[in-house]
Image (cartoon, rainbow, N blue to C red; front, top):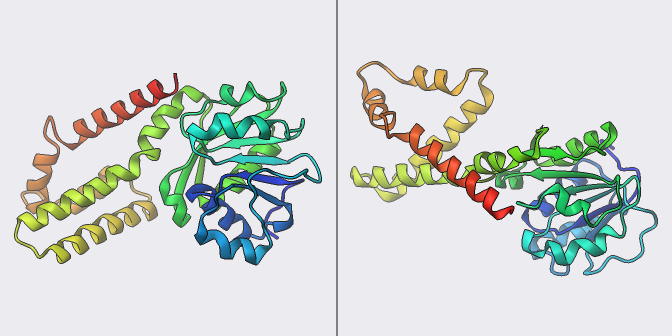
Length: 274
């Protein structure tokens, strides 16, 4: 067994993120007998996983054999006020509450919990469904080293894990990595449209756009070089790439546009959190 938890693990919500995490945990050897899933409408695609491991999702949790070691809250933010208060009553003095609900602050959970309860707020992104996401965490003052390590193990099942000390930076994290996959998809969409405009067959244009974006992303992931150096390595002076970059890097080009886009997303995150 690669990892274990010292008590029941409660997963509230088995949608895309919750389901991806559960799949990763079980694949890494987590004992399914310690897993309790609260979800009144679990996705049909997870039914084989539940059946294989003898896990029965329920709308309301039955009495647990012990206080949870960890409660992972993976429900939609708009459902939180309905779902979390009953769950909070299950938490004991050693329970870790781990939330992946966007826009929900640590204080928003603490008000339902006994003083001193450890709470971690985390922001994953959608590549987590492939085990290639990145999650950034921020904990309150009561999170101890053992619980921090448990967070890294649980969230490591869906990709990389990082930490920030100041929760105020979570809106920037959301704007960069939480919303970031949409920016990449838009890039692929724009390349495809431009290829078609240049006369390429639409099916080939799509293949070229997708393979280029995903391949370049994999190069970036595997390389020790920074993005600027990789860009320079592809760019011959006076060549075709340089001609394109002259447009993309002008005073109101991609860097300026991306900066304004991420600032807008972060600003909207702060508004939603008020």
